[in-house]
Amino acid sequence: MIRIWYYLWASPNTALGLLVAAGSPKWRVRGGVVEVCGGLATAICRNALIQGGAAAITLGHVIIGRDRLSLDGARSHEHVHVRQYERWGPLFLPAYLGCSAWLWARGRDVYRENPFEVEAYREG
Image (cartoon, rainbow, N blue to C red; front, side, top):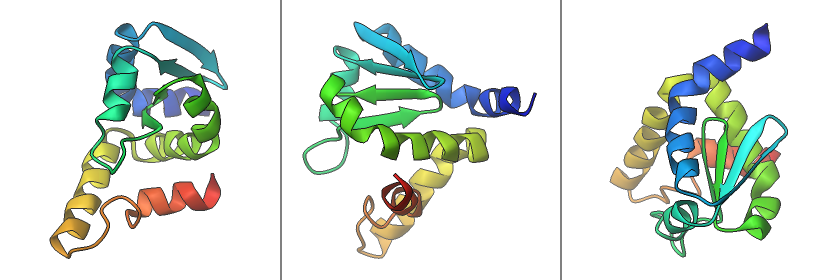
């Protein structure tokens, strides 16, 4: 029962991820998470607003990767983000972006110093 709550709480973000999955030719379910790559997923990762783009990005229970190799390499890091979505639910994206904006306004690294990324690098 509790596990269902996590999926429901994160579902608005997961819905965004599933829209990306619909435009991506390769997907699979692994560990209760949908992993997608190719097509739209690759384009989103390459154009992420961090230097060089991102290997993978998480939206709820969907991990979007450049390719399978990127998904494999980023899996443990991205699963930390899945757990963050389960805790924060629909508040995750505003909280993440708010932290980045606060860091940017202070001339700090909006990605590496974001507390959500710090946790994901530490635990993943």
